Amino acid sequence: MNFWGIINFKLLLDVLFALGFGLLLFSRVKEQRTLWLLRGYLFLVSTAWFIQRFAYLPLTSKLIDAVVLACSLSLAILWQGELRRLMELLGTGRLAVLLGNPPKEFRATSTTITQLVDTAGKLSQNRRGALIVVDLGSDLRPEDFLYSGTNIDAQLSTDLLINLFATDTPLHDGAVLVKGNKIISAGVILPLSRQGISRYGTRHLAALGITERFDRCICIVVSEETGTLSLANQGKLERPITSSRLQELLANLIGNQNSMGTSKSSLSKNALSQKTNSSDNIISDINEKETEESEIFINKKD
Image 1 (cartoon, rainbow, N blue to C red):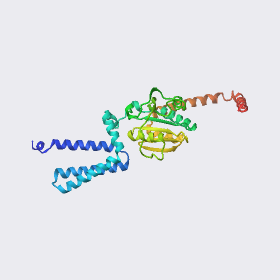
Image 2 (image 1 turned 60 degrees about the horizontal axis):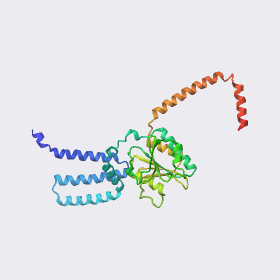
Image 3 (image 1 turned 45 degrees about the horizontal axis):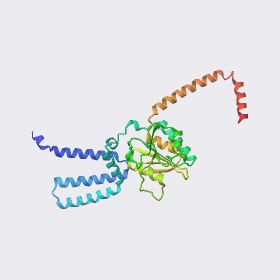
Image 4 (image 1 turned 60 degrees about the vertical axis):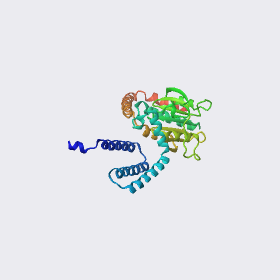
């Protein structure tokens, strides 16, 4: 009875909720410098609470409160994009995004990577500007954009993406939203970023703007002037990159969802090739003269 009387359930719940909130913040922060700032800020808040709760130090408490207030204002300025995104997600009720649990239906596959790389490479060769937003679990909705564009809801394909960015079509100036293996919409107008205004064009600023607000989406940019490829992720832009580098980045960001399927298909291909090689070895002596004649004919045609 005395044990239960000593425990303050209200204080215990307060500490548990604070620890849970702190762990959630730490799990969502990936940048090392931001993590250091968050640790220092939470340490100051914890120190101020401890002094006010268990020690009667009025002057020290006032000083720490002033430091916490100044740090809060500074962090509000530094993290204005993150705080805005947090309020937007809370306002729309997307708690799964905040908790870092992306829905499976938004995850792309290895086929998606191949089609995106092929599309970006062809558009880059033709110097045709493009902006492709790939949703990896942010659950992007029409209210997240300045203009939601035209609903497409079609299977993802290289030919369709190239046609959407044709210069003589009304949708080529906007972005294309891709979720999984589907093209959701085209002609989407994205919010612009405030960083690098003097260095980047509108397409690159739009790619930075959407990835600053939502960390589970990436944006592929093809420059119309130079044809260079770029990839925006979490408010950072990597440019210029090659098609092979783009494929590597997409594979790392999207993940090897079909690695097992790929390994199985490679095994089946190896088995088929072994069978083909064995059969070829059996009939090679019979058809040797015919293959030599066909090779000579093909060489003459080339």
